[in-house]
Each structure stands twice: as structure tokens, then as C-alpha cells.
Image (tube, rainbow, N blue to C red; front, top):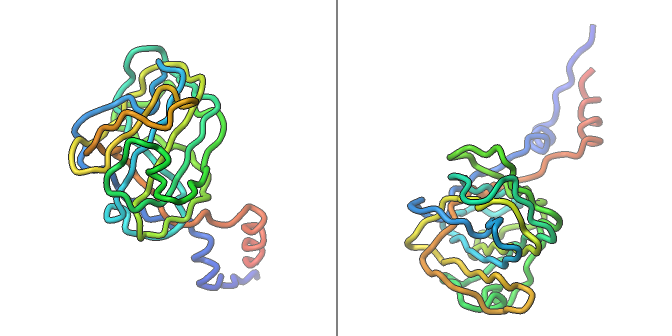
Length: 213
């Protein structure tokens, strides 16, 4: 008769893909097409979330934004040559110049490729930005998100934002030439930030499975 060998506690903890989920960006009160505005070809966009809303150190494994509806145009939307960056910043309000919002730090690229907003989203759905977990949040500073793309097409993709008490939005439709953008203060991007671990690779899971016999 086969017996079961118990998995050590530290290994069981590693297997479980632990994540804390934090709703950030303030109270949703309005909708906006930034930055996934499929009717404009090019975009550079920044927003920021406060440390007090996240309040947990660790790897950023997922960022989700809340969908409201499709506007003009026809989904799905494609955003080629797209980069998504994350960066720590001490700023509590965004400035008009993109590079100043890095606060002297180097942003980390967490997505590079063609970003797609699909055609089957429903109102209220949380939509993942599908980032790679490469950014470790220190829970000491605020968190800056930047989106850049060239050649976007499709529809206006409308997501929830807040209008008060947040660091603001900065954007330009000519990212190839502009270091300064249009600034809207107090706005916030309503999002869920997942902090945790990525779990074990499939090969590692195979070795764990061998502990059972």
C-alpha cells in the first residue's frame, strides 16, 4: 500500500501562488479612454498610485483595470510597439514632463510587444494588463505606471477612473517628439494591483509531485 509523504511547510508555501490584491486609484466616479484609445495611433501616458493604497512589498504579478464599455470604433483594438513600464517615485502629484516623474530612478519594462484589448469584455469586468512579473515594489514610495505605443487601432476602450485626491494623468499623442505632456491633476486610474510570487516552474512542480508516492 502506498503511503503519503507530507510536503514540508516551506515547500507548500512556495507552491501556492500567494498574492495580496489591492484596489488602488481612488473611488470610481468617471470613465476615460486613456491610454487605450484605439482611435489615435500613438500615445505616451503616465499615472501613479499611492503607497498607502498598496501597502505591501513584493513582486507585482498582475495589474487589472476595470472596463466600462466600448466607445466609437470597432473592437478588438491593437496597440503595436507597446511598452508598459513601472517605476518607484516619491512624487505625490505628477509633473508636466514625463522624465521628471521617474524621480531620478530607472523604470522597469514589464511588457514589450503588441497589446490587445479584446472584443468580448463586459461592463464591470477587470481586465489584466498581462505584465511580466519583473518589478519588485518596495512599499516605501508611490508606484508610477507608463504606457507607450505606436500604431494603435480599433475602438475607444473606456475604463473607470477617479476624479479627486489622486496624483493625476499625463499624456501626449506625439510620444516620438514630446517630453512634455498634457497634465490632468487629481485623477486616478482605478486598478487592482496583485503583489506576491509567481509560484514554481512546471519542472519544479514535477519534482514536488515526486514527493507523493
